Image (cartoon, rainbow, N blue to C red; front, side, top):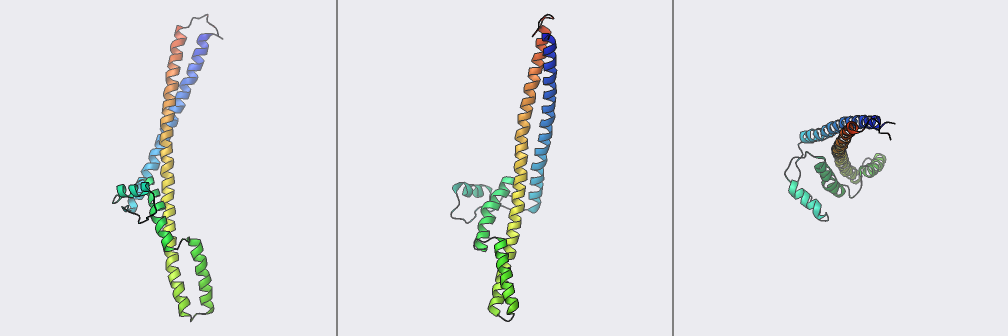
Length: 196
């Protein structure tokens, strides 16, 4: 095969790869920007203000520093949503439900309601059902909010990954473009008789 033909073929392939990588980078940038903007807009619409303390004496210094730095700010990032869900809501839910989750508390409530149905005049049992019902409702709402915030965090994190991937693809595209241009320049300098 002639050297010029080989250089032109490989350089054309390099240009095509560069174009594909630039298009891929553009799509990744678009996806990352979309994810970040959606999370920001949806969280801002909820108007959640971050507290400056969680009241958890056992938390790490980094968690304390995060809430101190973000206290009073409107929640607009996935990282803020994750920290609020994992270190504020989760901590307080443990106190409300004595460490039990919604499914455990609602199971207890169903059992107590069955006992109350068998003995409807038992005032003590009725008071226990009412107290447990309040706990079940609060824990359900807290776990639901926590789940939604963690979904926002996951979506935001995927946006962050897409933005990093876009820069990698742009760099790859630029590298292939430079190599392709160098290949075309080399093909002009190669002799007609050169062979591989």
